[in-house]
Amino acid sequence: MSKPSYYDIDDILAVQERVPCVLQVDLDGLGSAGSGGSSKVYRNSRWALPFWMADRLNEEDYVNMEVSPIFSKQANRMYAASPVSVQLRAISQHYYQFGLHLGDLVPE
Image 1: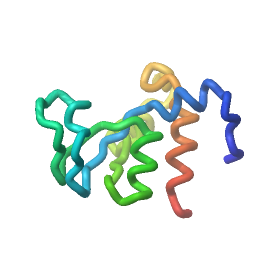
Image 2: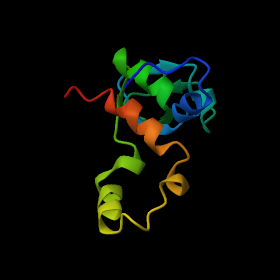
Image 3: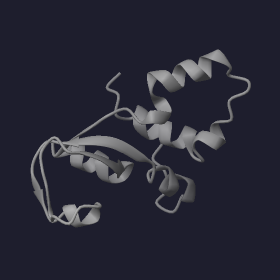
C-alpha cells in the first residue's frame, strides 16, 4: 500500500474504526475514558480502541489487538454466502481503506 497523504480524509476516517483489544499491563489514568469511576484499568481488560491508538499501543506491547468484527470468520462466511447482496458501505463506511491498514500488520 502506498503511503497515504496526511490530509486524506478517507484515511483519517478509516483509522477511527474501533478494534477489540486486551490490555497487557495495568494503566493509570485511562479508566476515566471508560464508563467506570476508577482511573486505573487492569491487565486483561477488554477495550475497543480506535485503530490508530490500538496499533501504536500494540507496537509498545501494551495491548493485543484482536480481529475487527467486520473481518471476523463469521463476517467472512456471511460475505461468501451472498457476496452480491452484501453492502460493505453499510457494514463500514471505510471497509476497504481500513482493510488496507489491517493488511499492513500481516507479515506475509
